[in-house]
Image (cartoon, rainbow, N blue to C red):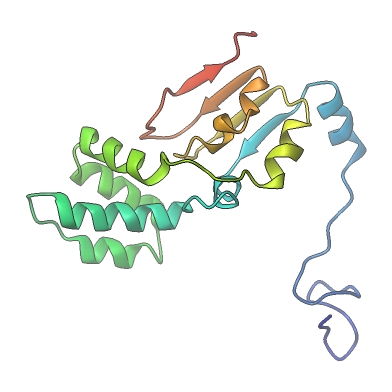
Length: 171
């Protein structure tokens, strides 16, 4: 356990210097989940726990794929440098330079591979009766992990290699 000379961690509390304290779960959140009145917003960290690339890693892979496979040369070096400062702008520029059908093919190649073992977070999330799940992820990890048992699954983002909205039929 690493602490500063006063015995406090970086967050002004006793304990491990490297890990932030975990706050208690608010009772209102527990009640909302129990009433199926809570929506999960699943970010890229969920898929990353299953070994899938993070947003920045996926953009880097897209740039590499475009460099190697597209007939038209592009200014990919500056886009790669831009990953350090503004990934959203880089994503927009990739989308403007790579034809949509090719971009979707690249995204599928990056994300559509079997995940050997789903990490524990999926078991935990599946045990919570969320009303819906919203994600901006390009991967389909959340839907492949039985999170589709919830009422609705919505993807908010472009491009997406699979249908943008799916669900189990409940309304």
